[in-house]
Image 1: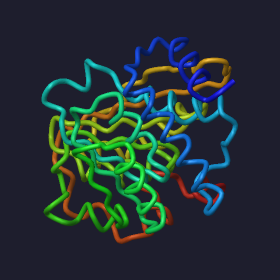
Image 2: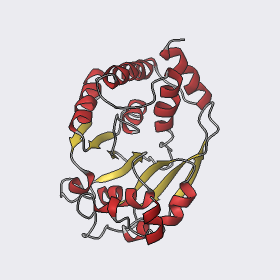
Image 3: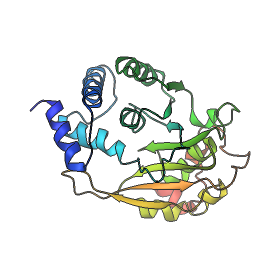
Image 4: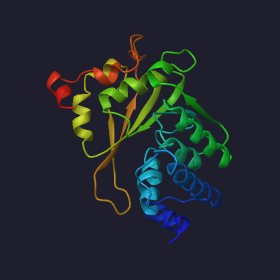
Length: 249
């Protein structure tokens, strides 16, 4: 079965309704992803249904209309990698203004290629470390929302993402089965960075039994100027993690 039919079936199963243009864009994205993956390591997931479900539909779980209200326009995808979850969100919701941020130049070049091939407007591809960008006036607390998938433990991710978000905005973090553990271990870090306690939405992807969740963190106060710390520090010294937990990771 060709990818178009596989993705259409999976999207319908999840409850998504796609236009012909959106379907064509997802198909083109899948082709470019696999072509470029043969040249550099973008993803270990290459089987068509797995790409459809574990990359595209999983990315779209980040969207909830009661959070992505009309005033949520500027969205940044921190540590986007091959474009997840940002590009699938942009395809489905072209009204958002999207910034894709990644620290690896060759991945950013791939993203630029996809954006051009899919004829997407209102997308910026940014080659920089998140810790560095979030300290720049151009980006600090300038976004309505930040999204991120498979980047880091929540205590680390909060330091990467919350500095980008304005007061009243939010972070949407896509997480796997250990989301409760991450919430508990980040209980001190999130409020320190200006975030409210995470709101949990459980997710089940078509044909998969593993547990997944999207954690929404509302930005309730400005992030102290100390954060984010210097590049690499959030990973080496995660905020709020007990010393014994740090050693185990």
